[in-house]
Image 1 (tube, rainbow, N blue to C red):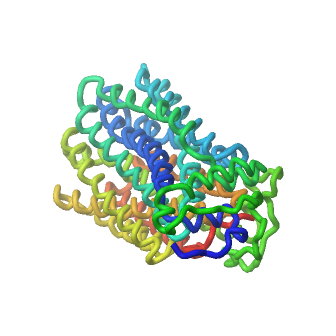
Image 2 (spheres, rainbow, N blue to C red):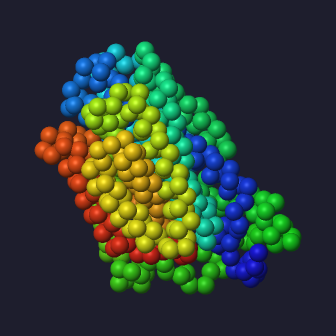
Image 3 (cartoon, rainbow, N blue to C red):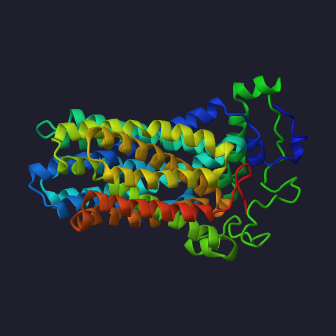
Length: 474
């Protein structure tokens, strides 16, 4: 590893940025990723449970729509509040709490005696799930080495595919059985157990600890990463960090300002230690443009993704396939998420954040139109796999971009608020599908989804390009 100069001139965050990807990074990625996969499994299961309950409880399309949407109402609230709490109380604490809340509620929902009870518990599940995702991506982005930060966050998001594949397998193997949907929901208690591991084994964000004045703890976390064997192997000797670097500003030359795209060279520090920040700070002059763009991108992606994939098994049943076959086709389509994530993880550091996100969104729009026109098993699977790959690659890029747009005091709030605004679309999308089908059938519904992807693509092009820049501290 190239020697960056005397360690007395490095802040703790710079010391983290210059590290290779170490075993400590891998453990953090694994801990966050398993929680992420469990989240995806829970969301994915609802698409299968909707189809099963529609038959067992003789539900109308409107009632099934509410099963798909009510969790997203909770997610919208959870995402906005969770990000704010993460900026005030720490990333790790809120991450573990959200896993516990939604894991317990998911298990209890297996005992639902009717639609009303199920809807209430799904709302609570959404509260925990909505708060967890932006907090996890924020924590990972603050630890990942700068040169591969985007790739690491995309890999984190790729755990979503494993969770959705698990949901598809459970949907295919378990849900069609008698009371299978109850057993499927009972598996949602796994996050409650995982929360105990998360709470005690994950490190807290160094940036958060420094802002809170907990410098000894911050130094200990940095040293734990610097003591990884990979660091010694690459440098030829163990790292010797500067013990005097107890403040994020000590020994710093003027900080490189990563975000001057909005015409303002610098910004007042809204997040000095002890000073609270909130949602209104996202709309200060230099952040206004990027907040607007990222909110619109989140809205478009959520509307198209959840409108299509939450209803996918039910749409296949409506096309004449039986429950088992529709679940099997959904499983095959879901597997295509993995190459989508892999491509996004590679391209996000090669092409950059903005072109990668825009390209995958444009590909999603084309694939959505194709899927809406598909009229045979082969075409449905091919178009569905293409849509799945492009759409989930876009998700990976979106999660990588979002935390980078905001300075440390606002990073959790910014990521959570963008996700919360997107969740409004995820609430509306499942509810809108029956209306869209009534107007023009499946083809019309997927044209609308394509338009949503296209609007998100336009918003992505308005974002600043931050590939290779350090995360902003002020």
